[in-house]
Length: 191
Length: 100
Image 1 (cartoon, helix red, strand yellow):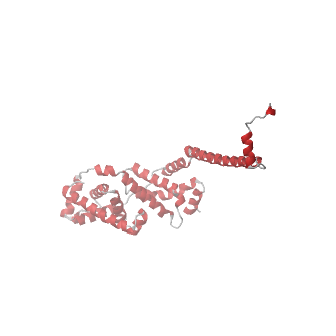
Image 2 (cartoon, helix red, strand yellow):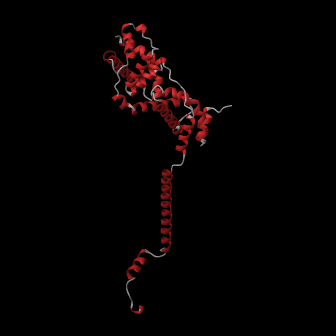
Image 3 (cartoon, chains in turn green, purple):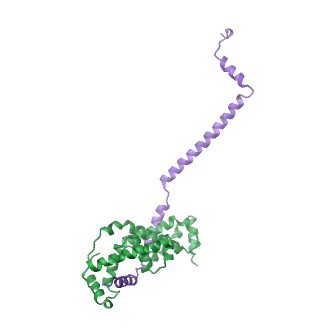
């Protein structure tokens, strides 16, 4: 029978570093899916996931077995992704992207015949990615966790370490930021 | 254009786009190699710790030697009063006739 997470963690704490590998193998798919929500380049995604594991290893002594290891790990993952967004904020601010012809066509269809502009279109996917890239780090994090992943405010508070009122305030600001960008996109045709 | 409708469609597009959970080949090995690097001996820290231990041991040795010296001095001067020791010190430089 495979050892449980708690047994593996106890062994790593006792100095058997090799017992960390089964944990890395088990939870890396989940971490890659999370990291790909915030970074597009493969090298960035790999660096994020590696940093998550390094921090998890360094902070393993702070893990209390009162909650599943995966919950504890996901908190670290969200924190590392947020740090990544903040570190790349400068490139976001200086970026200026014009919309492609297919994106402009999709936008026009939303304006004239909304039912014909499907969410599955490649243009919609590209547009939403550009939109997310232009959001501030906290706005992107909140929109991703609340609106895209469909988590509750309490869950977001637990994952980010922010208080529930702080999450609500940030969500409100994030929505306002998103709408400003949408208005610019719809009228000026750029982001 | 209805911005609420645009927002709804774009958020729906983002939801429909489930990110891949594929892990690159040999990623576990890369992570474990990085962790072993971190886990390895840190020579600067070990050197600093050694210095601190040495300093503390020296302080303890100094304290022990100081105490022992004070005790020996105390024992050597036992039996003489302060007045006698003062007198000895004062008269130490006086040369008497019979001395030479």
